[in-house]
Structures are given as structure tokens and as C-alpha cells.
Image 1 (cartoon, rainbow, N blue to C red):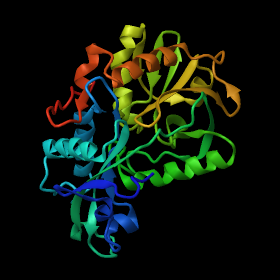
Image 2: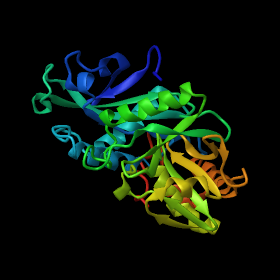
Image 3: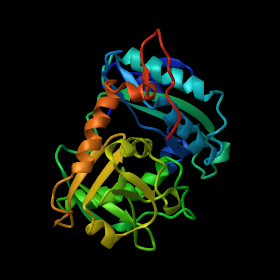
Length: 315
């Protein structure tokens, strides 16, 4: 996933050729994965290209950086980074794209002491279709466990946290699955390799909570907000594997995944093989992100010169 030849990036306050965003060869971020990032989708809307829940994504980026010092020591505010996203999307010329703001250590040497590094903020933009292939998903249970809160900060969207998730993804794909579910050390289901999850039992949606190590997903919080209008109530709690396998529905949520139904886990069909709640939520979600649902208009930030609506508060 790259912007391609001639692509632009925002690098510490200025638009430059994307090549300028590359980390220094001896950076602790390059060698040890010490950095934080966000993934933001921009969709075509009647008001032009618009970023979905930009303010919430940038707030989460800064919250992640505070957990990984000295990444919080940058001369840029959340407002600066919101403007940077809008500016970079405009310069890219894309009507629909994926935006990757990153705070990482640009320099610092080969040692594993991040405090000697220099933090840098960048914004990258690329055309990208999403994390998962079209159609209902077939998942496996990963042999890799989701690191618990005492091992890695679960609330941070950090580069190094994705090593386990990528191992789980590679294992799943090599065994013929689309993705994998990860369990914690107690055997509870936490998330997939790149998305939060929900199950449906009757009219109740259940999602692992942040206390169980789930990432505070922006799409996840959007489902919390959209569920009542669909006649669904939402509960956060730990989930046993047998509850997931016996659920009426299972679906994933994330910036890349959007809202995606899961057909099988370990070749076992979930429920009766249909996903009415996920389908209903996904249908409305697609209207929301494309600016066709006025009730959620404050979730969109137009990426054009005349407007910088930073979006509503997280739900």
C-alpha cells in the first residue's frame, strides 16, 4: 500500500514528496517498531471528498503518543494534524482514499532507548479498497494470543503491537482463511487481526470491552451509536469462544473492514448463515460515510479549501 510515483506527504508542517517521509535508517521506529499511527477513510460525498470522524481519529493518535514517550513531544496540536490531513488529501487529488497519520522517531541511533530519538509527525495518503476481500468472511482461531494490558497498552494504536496480529494474519491466510480471531491468555475472544468484533444474540449486540484489551475502535463506537435505531442494544463484556460460535451473528468493524459479516469460524457456520443486523448496520453506515444521512453529518470533514468541520465527539 503506497501512494505511488509523485505522491505527496505532509512532513512536520509542509507538503513534500512522499520519499521525504521515510524514516532515517538508524531510527528506533524502523528497527524496533516504536511509533503510533491512525487509519482514516476519505469517501466521496455530495460535499466532495470527506474524512470520516477525523477529530476522533486524531484524538486517538495523540492519546496513543502519550503512552509512548517521547512521541508526545512534537510541536503540533490536534488541530494542526486535522488541517494536515485535509491539506494532504486535497493535494493528492483523490476522491476516495486511505489516510495514514504517523508519529514516529525519525532519528536516535540503533540503541533501544527511545528517549534519545526525535519525534516526527507525517501524513500519508493512498488509494486503497480496504483490509478484506468482498463477501462474508471465513475465520479461524489464531494460535497466537492477544497481548494483555500488562504487556502492551491496548488503548494505543502502536506499530509494535501489530507484530502479533500480522503473525496471526499470515497463519490464517496460509491455512485458507480470510482472517483470524485472537484470544487473550484467559481464552476470551478479543478481536480479529485488524478489527473489533460484535456478536448478536437476539436483539443484543455484545462486543469485548476495552478492559478486555480491545482497541477503542472508531467504527466500533459508530456501531454503538447506530445500533438503537436498528432496534439493537449494545453490551460490552468479555466473550467466551463458545458464545461466539453459538451466536446468531458475528461481524467485524474497523476503518478498513467497515462492517463485515462473518460466515464461518473454523468452517462452522455462525447462526443460520444470514446476517440481518450486520447487513442493516452496514447499509446505514455506507449512507453515513457518503454524506447521505443528515443525522450523522457532523461525522464528516470535507477535504476542500473552504471548510474544515472537524467532526463530532466520539460515541
